[in-house]
Image (spheres, rainbow, N blue to C red):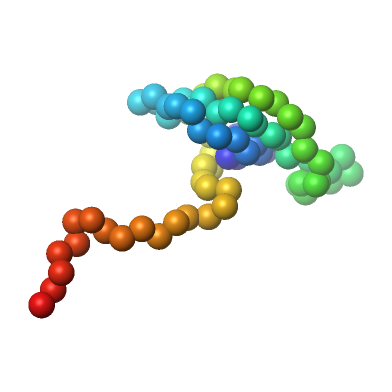
Length: 78
């Protein structure tokens, strides 16, 4: 997840509400390179449980990519 201001975290989604406020557990923040704040370093920091305000979230996605599943509503064509 990317936040306004440049922070990036990875965690396990535990819940959300209608305003897209998210509860994430086991969060790790990816630190910025001190010499160039536009680059991420390989260093991470354990954060734990967080509540992320929906209005500050810029981008949200899966860490390991998406999984293709069959469409249960697709009808067989003859």
